[in-house]
Image (cartoon, rainbow, N blue to C red):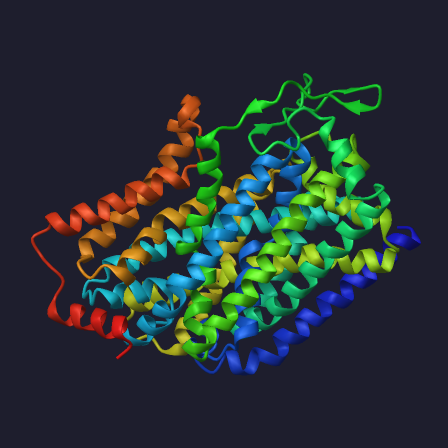
Length: 520
């Protein structure tokens, strides 16, 4: 290990130590009760709420996945995805945050998403709670796997060590940290990590642009690649027999640009729909200390999101000019941020920038593990099997669940060629279609019934799998992002089942709805 690598490692160790200190500081308070451990006692301020929501949401794919897409096939896919996410972020904060904060308190002080849905419909047999908890376990396991892939790629690229070894070490660190501090520690560290992420992105894009000769030179180079800067066309790397992009005369080979029509644009914009069903974001709405502070949180969140997404996309564009042949595979392209950082920054500073990737990964994976564990321990174990379980027992089960989920996620992440963006997109679609329509109808349509809620969740989740694994394989108009058709199907099912069902919402449910609507 040379001196440069040692300096990078020292910087990352300093960062990781700071994260652990945060966990230790919050550990005592987190273990007071399950509400403190899972929701922080509804004590988050507006800055922590905003930054932790976005940092836990964006994860390592913001620093690796999104720049990798832009580097590999140009502007269109990455830019339309970013636009969809920005719109979805704004609408989620504007429409959902305030009413969910109010409704979660009204619904028997719900502290998890499955518990909120269950209490919203005043169910006795806990069907919604169980179904919601199981889907959270499934999709968050995939999400956690994407974070572990990020850890593996980061450390193996930096230190030349085996991918699997470094992926497992990263998973162990995240698991120990999450076990230690719970929601408050996670949210506090997410705030710090959100700052690190946006600083890392900004520093790299400025230095890289200067090294490339300025913005004009970056765009001039990008225009030479067919379709690379088109909003309505897609650059197509020409692949050889090994699956890697061909290189001729020191330049990567591209074919004719692929068309990028309205259907493709709608498919990428559909990423924004996912926000309405993202537990890691929705929980922050529930956890803020005052409803009136959500307006300030929304503004903070939007500034962070717009800057971060725009810079991440541009990093992929400038990276293609500076290192055109460094990454010849779609999976390898996701390391362009690492390449830029280690090439242009002093080793110690590069280490702190690399900590930005680690920050993104930790901020997401600890959220995913904690929410999934709480879904099982609070909603399945205590909600179904042992209703008189003490807080201590619930937290013990949650920690056992954390360990099991982490092990499964590690197994899913064993393949070094896993593409972070693909893993995230599938889990994102799963949550968006399973919980997004139900969240909107629960908050804004009084006529929604318990059976409509159950059928909506199941149909949305099932359509994600069916569309991804079967229908999209037909190609053509069917090759769209599975979130869009699954979201539509779930919405239709909720409406039809609610209207055609024999039972209507009870007077108590309607009373709750009206009280939340009026703010009474």
